[in-house]
Length: 367
Image 1 (tube, rainbow, N blue to C red):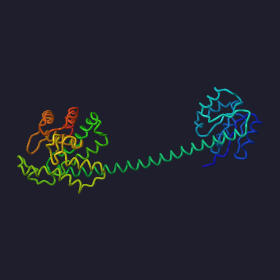
Image 2: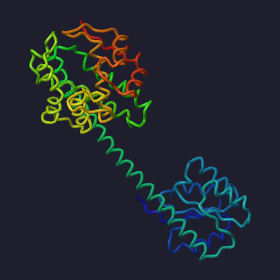
Image 3: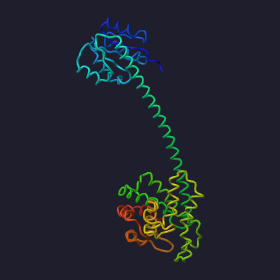
Image 4: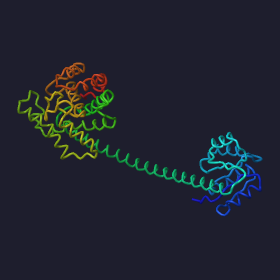
């Protein structure tokens, strides 16, 4: 970058130009213009080397404000400091100059020490400002590059997480002989119900990002069923007490599988998945399993998946039952037919009743 070591003087009076040149020629190169038109030509041809411009208010051909107006159009005034020279003592003239963007005024007659100090301060301040802006720009560019890299990495990791979760959930679907779209419905129901909760109850501190993570984690809610024998998972009749106890263990087995065998790159999704797998059969009144959690001891993520899992089970055909109509299933959930849910959760569920019915149609089981 070329060093800015030149002062450009717009001044029609040759004696006053000589006085200014005498003050600064030992420290700076000097360019002189007798009118605004000449000065603009010099500014254009030497722009990269000019440290400051001294601009006389009264000049022939083109006065100081005409010069400023031309430079304003070209957006030059924020790239080089301008100081206006005037013999007038008018606040209106000063105000107008500052509105254009000049950094200071020099009054005639000249006082060399004052002028030297004003010019030195202006150049130092402007150079600091330009260096600071350049540093901020460089940092912003660096941050943007880093963010772009992180976004690409996050997209790749989310893609890998999605493949892993879909593969694991497909194993559950195949092993359990449930519908191929069951996991998709659970995910969409969870996000839908979560949005309703987020809108109604900000105290849960849900966000759009968290809901996406809960949606992915919900896909593994029944992964523990791969550890349950086929004769229990696929039994069409009522389970015996011992069989039911073994079936209930799919919650703890699922949490163990996620803890010991599933490698998710997103720590938050992993924590949601572990919690949901273990606690999606807990009930708000404490009558669920495996830990007998009660009320808000149950995480909001597990509460969400618990309700949507019940709703999907009621509206889906199973080896041991026919599917209920959506309205019937809705009433059964609201009446506590399949266990207690929090009043807040039920309120949020009521708000998205129609959306759930639309999702059932969109992701209905294939024949």
